Amino acid sequence: MQPLPQPAAQPVSGHLQRWSGDPVALLHEGAALSQQTGKVFALKLGLPAVVGFSPEWNRRLLTDLATFRSAGSFSAVVPYLAGGVILTDAGHGERRGAVNPPFGRRSMESLRERIRAALRQEQPPTTFDALAWADRAVLRMLNAAYFSSDLDATLLHAFLAPLRSAFPVPAIPRPVLFARMNRALDALAHRRLTGGGDDLLFHLARWPGGVREARISLAAGHDTTTHTLAWAAWHLAGHPEWFHQGGLKPVIRETLRLYPPGWMGSRRLSRPLDWQGHTVPKGALALYSPYLSARDPDLWDAPGAFRPERWERPPPAWAYLPFGGGERLCLGMHLANLMLEEALTYLLEVAPGLRALRGDPTPRPGVTLGPAGPLVVGSG
Ligand code: HEM
Image (cartoon, rainbow, N blue to C red):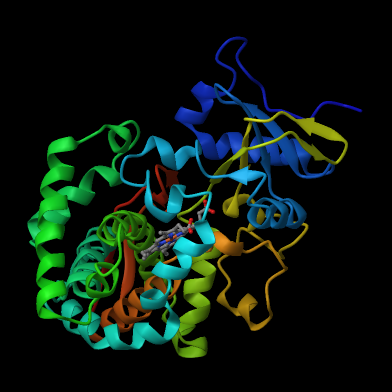
């Protein structure tokens, strides 16, 4: 049996340098090498790592939680994401059961009006950078959904800003900033517990660890939604007919297919894995890539083209994973879709005749995938 294919590596550092420089190019190279041989390739990232992008690999990794663990995955390196349901292995299903209800599709309806009102606080000028606008809009929508807009907006902005910088900035511990944010959240949670309410914090604050889940999920939901909103606005600005033809859902789905902010999901193997005749050692990193799976030419027609009309048919199973899948499916999927729909509807309403003027939508990987930017659009 041949070893797993692997892209060109340095003798000592393996793929670490290429991973920190241009991981998307490295992924494309690995995908091309393994396209005909099972769509799994090896990387050396300080630890042995395997990356797979076939539907079978995705299904196995996302449903076999006993073998593919979250402890020790990439999220553990970023203090913003290192905790809560994201890093829970034992008892994950139970914890999700507790935290899921306020994030369910039906509960979202109670947040819709508040999110609409938050968007209306700022009207975009005639010409603006869609990325900067999306950033502010998502902060306001999250503040409305979680805290009825009662959290100090400057603190929320300052707390989340490092997440949008390139590595290693998001991985640097910030004890003072985190303590300030925790104090503000605890004070608001106390107000909800004594005075009542109907925002997300009101629901989360009622059980142990809930306020921390609020802080962590805010971080998971901020730049993911911002980047999707910016890319969707950019594409819609170039093609207003898409909105008139099919509404916003196919545009949002297609944006998330080509540019999944969660471009790379990581796990650690709790035991050796036999996969297609190869044995991957216990402790290895196991990665799935919503980015590669959604661009596989064996599964998608013209995968590099932005075509909302492809959503007239269902996607291939386990190949479209912008929100992950299985028990660890994104907690905020319905909230993200609500924010995206409301923000794009608002934009089309207040900026009629929106056009893409200049910019660079090339995906750039950080903690999440985002557009290189700026994405300058204009109306009128
Ligand atoms: C377009 C926006 C979003 C995208 C593309 C996205 C993507 C993802 C993906 C791919 C995963 C699975 C990661 C894995 O398998 O390792 C995930 C998990 C998660 N997301 Fe999102 N997300 C978005 C918005 C949000 C929002 C708004 C929240 C706020 C609640 C959120 C909270 C979470 C949490 C807490 C998890 C971990 C779930 C678990 O492990 O049980 N996300 N997200």
